[in-house]
Length: 290
Image: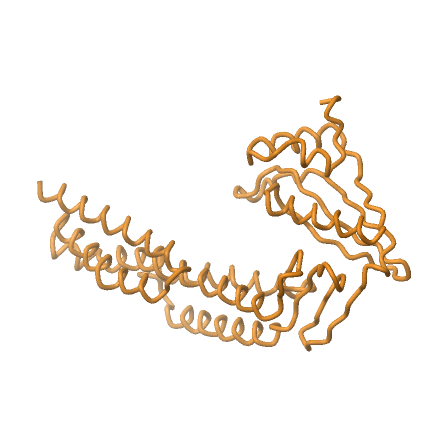
């Protein structure tokens, strides 16, 4: 009976901790208040009731480390990453932006890469509390955090987007802005294709994706925007681009899909519960031939 009561308390504390992790994006202070003052004490109490004080003293450090990583460290890192991107977007974006991306070059991928490395470093630190050379790992984590803060500070002015009035806007990390007006664009080319899942990445999956490529009149370098998954927001953004192209008399060319691409298009469309007719028209799918 004692063990059963302890398990019930632990389950309740985990549900509460998960709610705090999800709610952190809405109110980080209240979420942490609930986590540290209610959920964590309940978790400790549940573990002691389930086992004993002596066993918790022996194994509790590992249990608590895993708990803190899963319900505090990881959600906090994600919250800070989202907060930075939201703050950046609110600083530069107005209501006339169709698309906004927080990086204008491949340097933006470096920030994401370092962020992922930081998560793994924290995981190594908290999921293995008995790990040797903790000081070295702690120094590495602090160094990675300082690098990420400094890098994001210097890259704050780096972004790009599609503005429905001004055209294609890009700004480098120095804040130097470049605008490619719609009058300077020769055509807009849409390339749908299938992204096949990587065998080395179990989280990856095969799905329908597409690129929207802006082809300038007097420049060699095309400007491409990548849509990595089927979703209503991605579809509507593409429709908004099509509308802008039509308003500015820019040819909007959609590459014809082969049978494999069309198959995944239909599968993902059905999975997302999206309107067939509206998006068939966008991708110029012959409904009578389906």
